[in-house]
Amino acid sequence: MHNTRGLLLLVGALAMPGLAHAHPGHDNMQGLLSGLGHPLFGLDHLLAMLAVGLWGAQLGGRARWLLPVLFVGVMVSGGALGMLGVSVPVVEPGIIASVVILGLFLLWARQVPLLLSGALVSVFALFHGVAHGTEMPLEVSAMTYALGFALATAGLHLAGLLAGNWLQRQSLPWVSRVTGALIGLAGLGMVMAG
Image 1 (cartoon, rainbow, N blue to C red):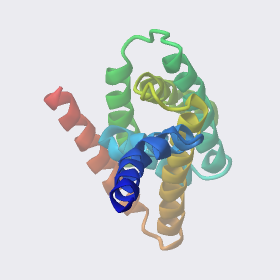
Image 2: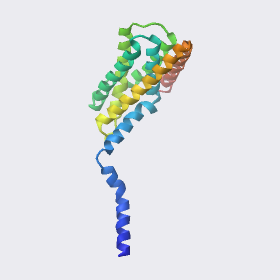
Image 3: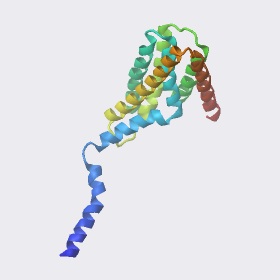
Image 4: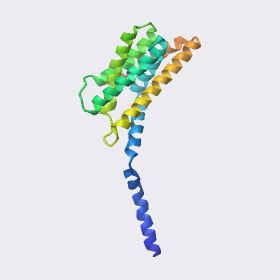
């Protein structure tokens, strides 16, 4: 009797991880975490998304909110294209170009018309989104994965925007320019490494 109960407990304990994994909702949590991690742990994505927030702060006015909103919206659309297997040419070079060019615009620190800055950010967002969608793990929910990378991206934009706004208030706009130079150099390093 005692051995039977012990054997049942052992079998139950061994089966627990499989049961837990089969529990509904785990693919959603895994999708959310995968989506959150993709922009945060890819240096190219991280730098470009921080740069968008910094650039929005540097440009000021409507660019502060429009550039991040455009980026997230177009990126999610690009993510859907990537998930559907739609081929978009030059995705990786486009992502690296986004790091270099956004860094250079921060360094340059000139007013850029909202239409041009919005168009540029949208093109870069498409590349980033397609990469996110293409690299989605097969076993996760597409909706929660997209929610994850959208939230992480918005958070990175917000971090850049808040830092940029703070630097403007402290009369330290040169720090954004130096940061832009470093971001651009990191992008050039990615070009050399590729």
